[in-house]
Length: 385
Length: 130
Ligand SMILES: [Zn+2]
Image (tube, rainbow over all chains, first blue to last red; front, top):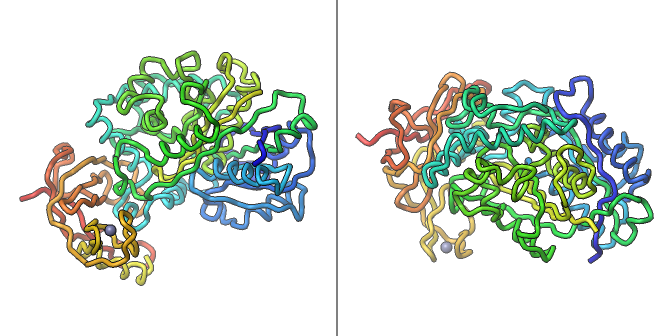
C-alpha cells in the first residue's frame, strides 16, 4: 500500500449562495484546490454529495462536475453516505492512490441546500434517518439528537449550559474564519433563549442550512514534492464504520459506537494513540453531537464531554482543541462538503496557515465526519512531515 | 404515501409483529431476514408487549411539513420486555408531565392525514398507562 499526501485544498465563503449554481459552487472549490496544488490534470475524482436529487433535482453528479471542471472523460464517481459523504469521498480517493491505480485524485464534496424551502431541506435531511420507523412517526434530525441529549442529561447530568458552551466556543472560533457562514460570536444567554426546535435543543444548538463545496488534491506521498513547496500533509489513518440507521436500535443512546469504531480503526492504521492528536475537527451538527463524539472518540470519559467544553479544555488554546474552524455550527453544514472541509481546516492548521485561529505546534490532526444520527462515521488522521 | 409501501408495513404498525430468532431468541422489530446476533435465518412471529418504559423523549416544535398540524408534540423511545426499543409519539398527556422512566402503553392511532396520496396513515403511539 502506498502512502498518500494532500497537496492541495480548496474552499470558498459558505452561506446562502443564491447567485451561484450547484455546479459552479463545486467547480469553484475544485479549481481552488487544483491551483493550490499547482496541477491541472487529474486521474480521477470522487465527489461526496448527499442529496442533490432532492435539493436541486440533479443526480448523475459525476458527469456534470467532471465536464464543468474542464476534465471531460475523467473517471469521476459520486459517493453518498448522508452527511458523511465527504469523508467517504476522501477515503475512496485514498484507497485508489494507495492501491496504485491512480496518482492524482481530487476528493471533494458539495451541497446546494437553499434552493428548496426550509420544509424541503428538513425532508431531504430526514431521508438519512429510518423512513419507516423514525420519520413516519414524526422524527426530524434535531428531534433525534434531542433524544440523545435528553438521555445524556439524564444519565450523566449534562447541563443546558454545557450544551450552549459548545455553540459559544465554536462561534468564537468561527468568528476568526473568513469562510464561515456565520462568522460572529454568540453568548450563553443568546443560545439558551433562541427559538426552540426540539426540546432541549434550540436553533443555536443546530448547524445551519448551507450552500458550499470543498476539495482536496491527493497524490502518492513520494511524488508530493514534484508539485508543492508547501509542507506536505500525509494521510496516515483512515477509519470507516457503520451502525444501525435507527437511533433506537443502538446498543446505547448516549454513545456513538460507529464513531468509536471508526476512530479506533483510524488510530490503528496511523499507529497513533489519542494522546498524539494535537487538534480535531468533529461533526457538531448539533451541540450534543460534539459532546457525545468527543467522548466516543475517547478524548473524554463518557459523561465528561460537556463539562470539558464548559471548562475551556476544547478551545483553540485548550488541552485538545476541537473545531478550531468554527465547526459545522458556525462555518456551515453543506452536508456533502462537510467531511472534506474538515480536512481542509486540518491541512491549513498543519501547514501553519490558519491565521488567528492557528493551534500552536499542530503536527497531527484528526477529522471525524458522521452521517445521520450516527449510522455512518469516517475518521481521518493527517500528519505534517 | 404509496399504498403498497404502506401496506407492507401493516403487520409491524398495526399488530406490533416482531421476529424472534429460532436459534438464539433475539427479537427484532421490524422483522429481519438474518439474525444480527447469531446469523440464523429462521424466525417465529411474536407480538411486542403492550407496556414499555420511556428511555428518552423530546418535544418537537419544528416538525416536518406532514406533522405541522400536530406541533408541538412529544416523541419518545420506549424499551419493551422483549428487548427491543421503538420510537413513537407520546399522546394523551400534558407535555410537562412526560418523564424518562415512566411506563407507557402502546395504542393504535392515526399517525397523519397524508397530503399527497390522501390516504390516512395509522400506527402505534404511546399513551400513559391507565
Ligand atoms: Zn439469533
